[in-house]
Image (tube, rainbow over all chains, first blue to last red; front, side, top):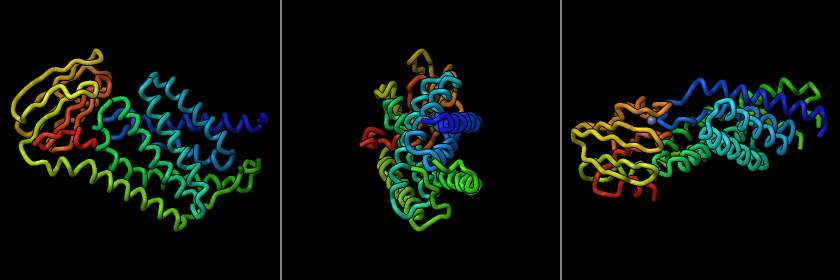
Length: 167
Length: 130
Ligand SMILES: [Zn+2]
């Protein structure tokens, strides 16, 4: 990994951290503290295409760990860990599927993110009660996924003329 | 690995969105209807740390449950149930307010306590979990 690549990763990790801090100020009206919209997935989408899978995973891990440190909250760690990596995994798979744009990949990622978070709630509570919120969260993920895709598309258009997209 | 993605929505994207919608619908049917279809008097099921500890009929009652060092004060009325007070840090359980329909639940994550309203007739949310 070159210094330049490392710097890009660091900048994106900082950006992802800013997004997760931003969304922590708007908690969802659910009795499941820790469940987030997943706005930080914008960075994962972008990093996945612009830098690659390994870099996207590294940025995600840094964001999740630093985010939990700043929040000082171990339950939040499990939520963002499961949510973030479910999203990354889903987007890695969807990216390989032929006719998908950044929107489809983002929507799939957002849905996986929310499934991962419900998974975290199931683990933490040891009860099936959080499953009742999955349908609503899946509907929400359609909107957050579309929003994430839209912002990522804007970024890629803006970056098209720079050399950031070159390996 | 570097490539610019397709930036305009495609038909494949619509398929992804449809799949998410379908999953939401399937989950809703799977997790909501068994309780709605449950006949009989509604009951309040209290679970502590994932274990069911008490079932209460929907009539005036008050209980305190302590787990993980936090105490949750549950108030049952004829029309529903609420967490009136709790000393957990986030107090999301208190802010949830009263629940009155089968299938709804109040969750206190710090205390690992769930208060679920089921449609009676046995089963409870364990039946829902499959
Ligand atoms: Zn609570």
